[in-house]
Amino acid sequence: MAMKSAPTELSITHDLLGLATERAQRYIETIRDRRVAPSDKDVAVLSRLHEPFPNSSSDPREVLKTLDEIGSPATVATTGGRYFGFVTGGSLPVVTAANWLAGAWDQNAGLRCMSPIAAELEDIVLRWICEAFGLPAECEGGLTTCATAANFTALCAARYALLNKAGWNVVEDGLFGAPPIDVVVGAEVHASILKALSLAGLGNKRVTAVEADGQGRMRADKLPKLNERTIVCIQAGNVNTGAFDPAEEICRHAREQGAWVHVDGAFGLWAGVSPKYNHLTRGFENADSWATDTHKWPNVSYDSGVVLVRDGAALRAAMTMSAAYLTAGTRREPMHQTPDSSRRARGVELWAALKTLGRAGLAELIERTCAHAQTFAAGLQAAGFEVLNEVVINQVLVSFGSGDITREVIRRLQEEGTCWCGGTEWQGKTAMRISVSSWATTEADVQRSLAAMVRIARECGA
Ligand SMILES: Cc1ncc(COP(=O)(O)O)c(C=O)c1O
Image (cartoon, rainbow, N blue to C red):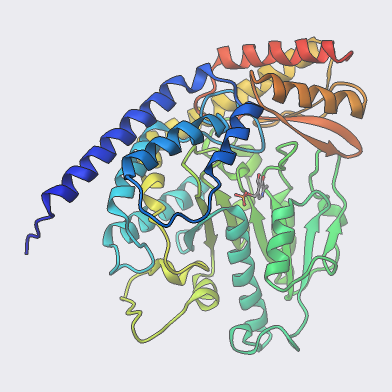
């Protein structure tokens, strides 16, 4: 039955969307001309938003205007091409557009009956990602908020599977009194895994950390004894160096001992899509579970994590929730693969990105950003600064001398506004991190940013 909205409602929506389009377009069109981090003044203006919970209603047009006028200047220009902090993609134009459409749809993607389109798009993107990573077709998975949630989800599946084999049902009986599970990580494990382990009740202190080499790769020859109740967490792409653990060797050994291997591939797994870089991801397909992000290298909007598990039954056993009113169909139900039940339809933007890029476009994006990282490394070395890592993908670590000088360069660079880089400590040395993860970064952005880095470093006495 066709329902007619009241004309006033329609015209208000039309008005608001027009206003949002106009303001969003202005934001996007000027993003490259503004400083990357907001100025202190623009951040200070945020205080104007603080007020007691309003008693009366406001005109939605005025609300949108306030959001843009106060909010837009206090954003960080992560979509502008010169943001190299953390590992941050800028959303592709088609992603932003698909996000608007998805906003209009406002689908709850928890169950297939709540949104057939959302469930179907999830099915499709999960299969495409399995194909892109060369993972077994029987994998099941889901879309999460982020890699940390994906790591958590996969570790819950691992926990369920290993304990189930030992005759213990963790869903029913919990962890108290359960047979112990040993966890093995590399010494340069990402903090995300440690958080996920603690959420999964596996703790941090009980974890065995295996020695890593100078690039942060787990030393396979230093692995402890593994058994059927061990989870080994390996990494595809170290957040500082971009290095990959030796997956082939570790997975072979783990499989012989019946251990579960989980891969934290928040961004690095995507390197496997490029023929130029796929030697780095060789062997990761032999693991049991994988976590990645599409809001990093594939440039999908936040929040967009992905979990994949070879033993789909274990994932479902760990994640299913049932109630009489939650009528599940006979096909995959998104709610039964991840911790959250109601959720936005993350598959919409992800599908739009992968469909638009295709394998070739994704490979080109990966290779282009890696080439920019090489240009940064070469430029900084030519200027006399020490690059601390082998630049294998899109991550560069640079030292400008002492810890104090390097920290000061980072501070002034962030303040100056041409570009934005963060800092880190890498195996005893203070470093500036450059992560080139955005489709929007051009050669001109790299040269302009390099010039700012070198000039500021000189001013700091480096
Ligand atoms: C290797 C690795 N794992 C996990 C994460 C955490 O990702 P998220 O913030 O999406 O949870 C990151 C973030 O950079 C990462 O590099």
